[in-house]
Image 1 (cartoon, one colour):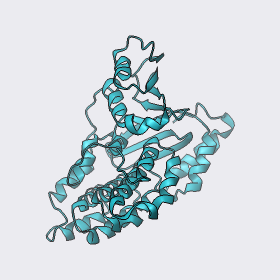
Image 2 (tube, rainbow, N blue to C red):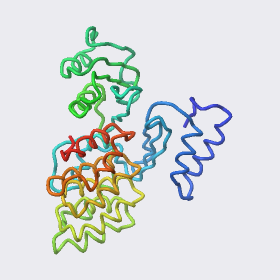
Image 3 (cartoon, helix red, strand yellow):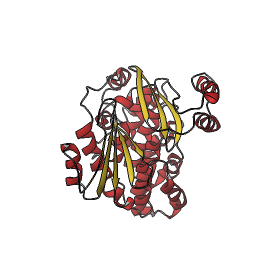
Image 4 (tube, one colour):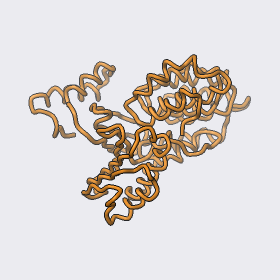
Length: 337
């Protein structure tokens, strides 16, 4: 990992923080802040699958340097796999974009978003609506999205600016899909062997009387893949039985497990889960925060949003644009895209 944007004088300090990150020592929020300060500003987010079950991601999120380690390859797994863990299946939402190979990050302006499309993709150009150029993929963006004002291309990056940041809730998901379709080469997904094994071991068990004990046991398994599958399966079951596994899952060291639990709780649409959904809003992973907001919006028709309004309002200033969009919808009791 290089530090091209980091002054030479602080490189040893940054390396020291990284050694601590990859050690057995507990990593805290204060350590997160110290590492970001040592590395300094920059751009880009990069993912490297070191092994089929070990993915390291690093780069700048919201202007701060971060490192994430995932012990399953969900960062390289198609969004359909996340859906396959849960029952029943659901329509595509912004939540699915977190598991995509293309990464989204905020730009330098509220009206700009950058899509990291991968090495070797894109070109070098900046075009506007009045002079869109000859790239058919860019022309399609202007044709389909009247709000798009300019498109900037660089190797591995497509930056899009719209006329009004208040319209992100209308265009963000279809814009993500359009950019991905045009600029990200189709690659076969990296098999997640651990996840495949966990699904095979758990079979088709659901949280009914016969499968409940096995599912509860799997939710506390030492195997993160089993925990991930199990907590997702609880969506269609009794909330009383699911509450314990979901509560534990929100503290899980695996991001994939926390995501699966937050997603299942969001789609359970039960007011008894308000406190857990509010806890999800403080998770370090933006996807978990997104589903926390989605869940609070889902219970709003029966309970209103007032009990959670303060926490929802806080997320309107989130580092992640998808979370900000979800917060704007949730505060008025409407389900986010």
